[in-house]
Image 1 (cartoon, helix red, strand yellow):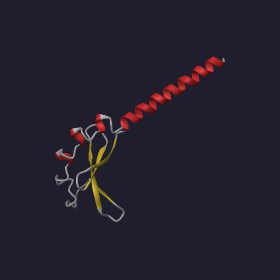
Image 2: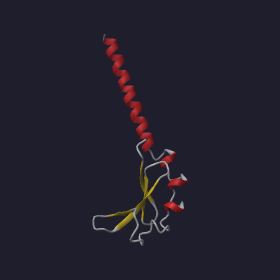
Image 3: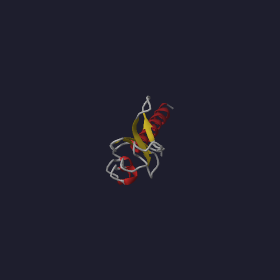
Image 4: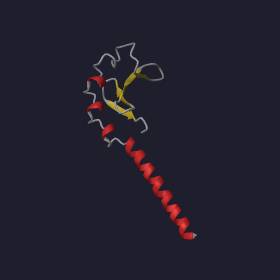
Length: 102
């Protein structure tokens, strides 16, 4: 009985570790889907560029702007093809991302 409990405990630890590891990989910047070297995440891609009018801080009607508490534009977000979004400052520098949770 003692060995059975130990085996169950070890199995539950390995399952929880495997789940946590896979979740961390999905959110890791080392994952190609999240890498700034991936064209879909690059600010050189027109869809992500600050030179694109849809992302420009000069476009008062943009739908993807990020603003501070005083209402000043501090950046913009663009959707990723793999889900989630990329976050850029007004100069087009990628400052973060979020994943779709898969």
